[in-house]
Image 1 (cartoon, rainbow, N blue to C red):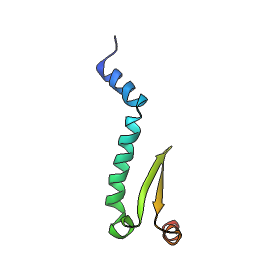
Image 2: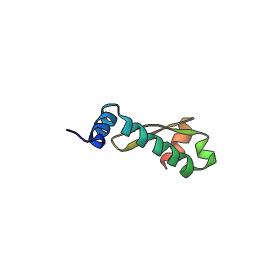
Image 3: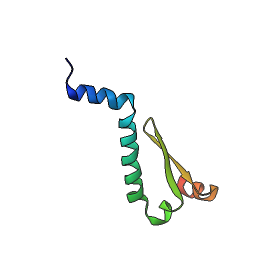
Image 4: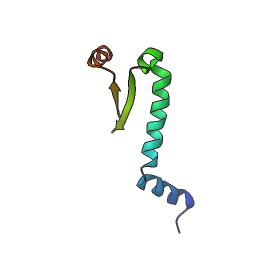
Length: 67
């Protein structure tokens, strides 16, 4: 017999809930970390294999954030 903890962990993994929870945590941290100006022209797009992909309002902003 499996424990409830194991059952829930397997369910969360199959539904990718852990990934979604991690992404939601990253979005909250992003909004706190980047400040109002950058937050206004960027948004976290996805989190894949530990890499955060960010959308930006323009190529100019992309260049500013790269350097």
